[in-house]
Image 1: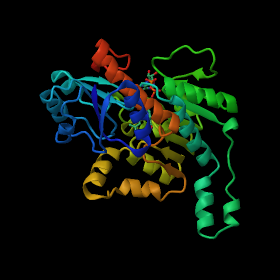
Image 2: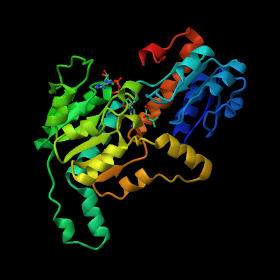
Image 3: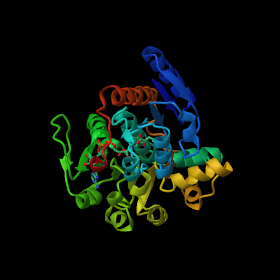
Image 4: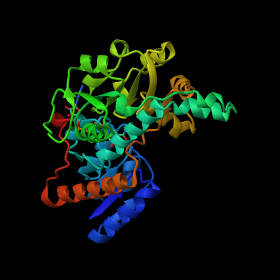
Length: 333
Ligand code: NAD
Ligand code: COI
């Protein structure tokens, strides 16, 4: 079958090409993002695979229908950028990769925690300014002696808890739909208790509308003074204005952000103008007790291979047996 893959990065090519060769697929690869205009590149395809953090809007699905393409396989987990009503309206089935490597994101959150606990940003800043002695004065805190509040105990949250158990940190967790897991050690608490008692709060929940600004000014005020906040979840989970104010007042001791609130607008500006101007991004970037990353917590060799292979398999499953374990239904999000 013919598959067109959008948003292809160099590190994905080997996996996509190996797959296509094994299955005898005709593979079209493009670095272009999937937009109403670029869909035309997929003419004659049975399915499309895509990877992007900018939205999949109605126009994309309308254009797919016109070309007779009925399946879109995302090579990632989150589906908050998909207009499912429009997809359903135009008869397009969507699959994702529910668990390409929960460990990748969990380890990234852990790395942010350690960076902040050991004040690595301050040490680096002092060294870069030639203040060697000053750089030796930033006393760290140990993760093993910290209480970590994990919001969301799904695949990624549980992977993180497993690592935290190994390190010996105390773990509090909040999830309205907890899954039993006797291998892990943590205390299930209310959100308020988690916020009040944690030295570090880390987010591992989807970016559903109801989760927007779960961490706002009021939530931050509940946190321990000087607590750390990590967001590798989704851009909408955290009110950045409140975070910047809390960093300035010292209510937050440090922040790790992989999923920045305005990433979509900034990425669109980057694509159009080659740069973006975002005062909040600049403010955060200038703070040594903030670690920013461009939505790369997922980005490991293991994850990329699994993302490519699972997405291609999903397109085959939809075409060959009209069903895929990875299909995302609007009411299940
Ligand atoms: P999952 O579906 O396995 O688990 C999500 C959990 O969050 C569920 O148990 C759910 O009950 C819980 N939840 C939902 N709303 C909540 C709330 N308000 N408070 C507490 N718990 C809540 O998902 P996962 O695989 O663990 O992934 C979690 C999120 O991580 C994804 O939805 C995605 O947004 C994000 N993610 C980020 C990256 C990255 O590169 N930064 C990569 C993959 C996934
Ligand atoms: C996901 O898989 O949901 C991610 O957040 C990774 C991504 C860069 C889209």
